[in-house]
Length: 544
Image 1 (spheres, helix red, strand yellow):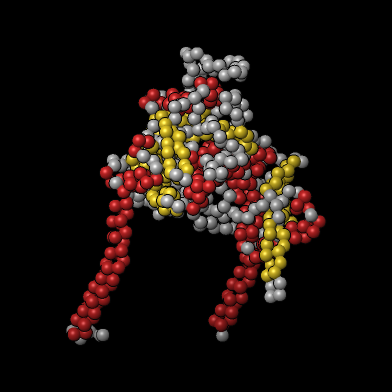
Image 2 (tube, rainbow, N blue to C red):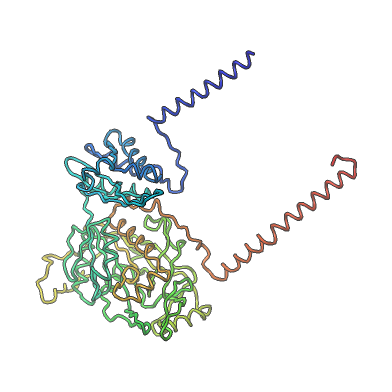
């Protein structure tokens, strides 16, 4: 009887303890985050940022109860935002408002939040209603708005970016400098504007115009024959500027009748880059690891593997650099390989780094090899005859550069007054250059329907390309804290570790033989041996 009472008492106390622990968790929360990207835990970078905020910051989260009750991710968003307050040591307060109640007065819309349309179904009718999930940050009388928050993957990055802009007034202005004739903001550069405009203030810079030091980074697209353009880039770099150079050594034309190409005769930008330390080779890259293209065949099109649409695998990224720490690959179109010059490799003032390389299945070819779809398709068939190697497709330099015009005559601005009252010969701050030997991977001609079809229908992964560009710009703006958060949730999920076709084929055959033959054979052998041993034991008088 005494033992029974003891068991009952232990049971009651255990239930009471669990109940008290449950009540305690409403006040003191603890989460053990075992995810790959630790998406449910604030990073050390975030904790440092929020604890160093000089004055109090308030975060108001307008969240519809209809969303919170139906979709689990909105509860995760709420938990993440609440954790900002818990780790800030009083610097941040969080207010969560049911937008279903506030929405009746139109308050969320007036504050700049974006409405989300949700469907409501029941037995008798179908209807749509408006919901909100947005953030308003308030600091010293100023506000910043995140109009819609629907996922947690980039929430920490977006919040930290808004906090740094609001609290520290960080300048996030970047420039687009299109040098190729015909590139316009409303056509070929529209996607680039859209992707970067969500993160930065983007302004287009006219060619042969002095680059203001207020630009945190400048993306240069194309080639030029102007010496004055060389001077513009040179002086911006020496002031500590950052340049993302997307430059070709050739011009390609895509039409319903096929493909043609010719070398560029104007190479001022490429010549300036070579003086800085990166040479853009004249040859074109080709690879059996490539994307498909549409080949005109009479009145129709056929799909062919096109070696000049090179697929750079996720394994080709430099895992030791923040830009490519979680590299997912690139899709290049008529690209040229890069090499470092001997001068820069022996210059201890400049750091060189290779960011991305092709698979070992790549080779180089000249325009005379033929880049038309039918010629390239034939090249892909006979590709085993080519010498294969890995080639650099993205590389970076950082450090103190010497002027390209040191000891030379300073060029004049054609037809206009020179904007440079004084020209610097040496670097006054650390400059950065990141080069990709391709412009087409970031430019989409939306008025050329054939180009749009290739991008949208035939494996040209624009998301990979623009993710790389976003990471590159973040590094160029010297905000590696935010870059660390951007790449934290990125992960290469492609099965692309083995690139050589023969090696992949051999591996697949091995897996098939192992699964279909060896595993069953091992089971049969094990069963046979076990039966034999049991019979042997039984024959000796053992127990069956």
